[in-house]
Length: 265
Image 1: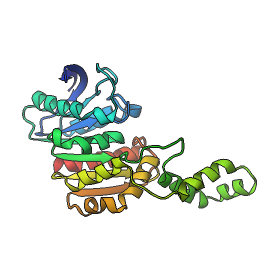
Image 2: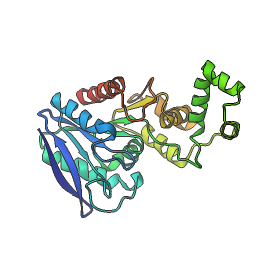
Image 3: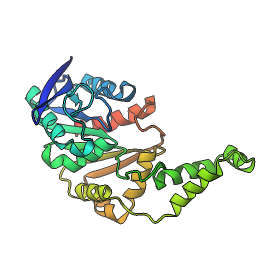
Image 4: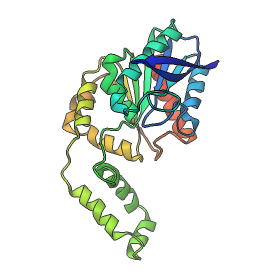
C-alpha cells in the first residue's frame, strides 16, 4: 500500500511517500539536486513500488524547499537534518524496522556520505556520486576525456573532423581543460575520508558514460581514495550506460539488483 505523510525537520513540514512492506529492513530514497521524490521519469516511484513488492518498506521525501515540502532550499549541503528527520520518521512509521538502507543518486549520494553519522542508517547505495564541482560551463576533465576517447573510436567523428564539421574552438577548450593539472576538490577529499572511515556497507554504482560518474571514477583512482578503495565494506560497480538516472530497462534492473542486495544482506 502507498500513502503520503508529513514529518517535521527543524520546525518545517516535509512531504513524504511511504510504500509499506512487512520486512524489518527498509529503503530510504534521498533525491538528488532539486528533484522531487517521484524522481526523473518517475524512476524513484517505480523503484519504491518494485522494492515494496518484495516486502521491503520504502520512504522517499522532498527535502526543505523542494516539491511539496515547506522551507528554504539550501541544497544538498544543508540536507543532513532533512535526512536525519526522514530516518526518524521512517522508523516511527514502521516500528518493526531494525535496518535502514539509504539510496542516493548524484549529490544525494554525496549528502548521505557527508551526514551519515547523523542519520543512523545501516548501509548505503550511492549512484554516480557528485564530487567534482563545475568551475565553468565545461564538463569535468574526466568526462571530456571519456567522450573524446569514445569519439576517436567512431569513424563518423573522424569524418566530421576532416570535413570541418567539428567546432574547433570547442575542441580547443576541451583539450585545454585536459591539459590542466588534476586537483581533487575539497568535497572529494571529505568524501574519501568519510568512505574510508565508514563502519557500514557501501555499494557505489557508476554509469560508465555519464559525465558525473566518469568524474567520480577518475577521482576514485587518486591517492585520496586509496583507503576507501582498500576498505572491505566499500564496493564499486561500473556498468555500461550513458544514463545518469537509470532511464533504460537494463539500467533500472542494475539499480534494483544493487539495492535488493543491500536490503537482503
